[in-house]
Amino acid sequence: MADFIVERSVCPEKQAIWMEEQSHSTRENALFTATLIHGWPGKKVLLTSDCHVRRARLAFARLGIDTVPPHA
Image (tube, rainbow, N blue to C red; front, top):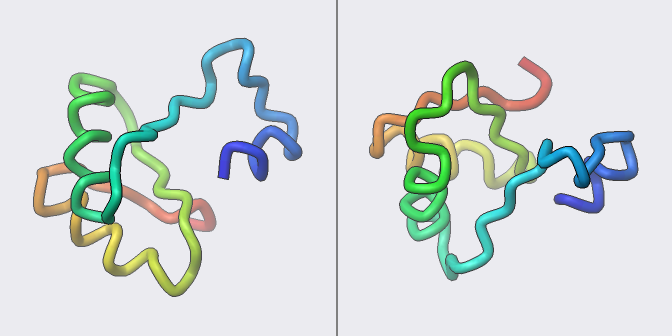
């Protein structure tokens, strides 16, 4: 996904992209990401595949992280 957004002109050198690279499941990704973004203001855009977005949004919501899909 990082490559996808860099190709669309998001500059990784300006720390516009933060990646969680420890998880092995959707649940772990939500847990590790929650720690990474704790206290960040604003909307959290959840960038994932169409077939995965429902499960991923639920995992993040269970941790109190409200997400929106990129097309919202």
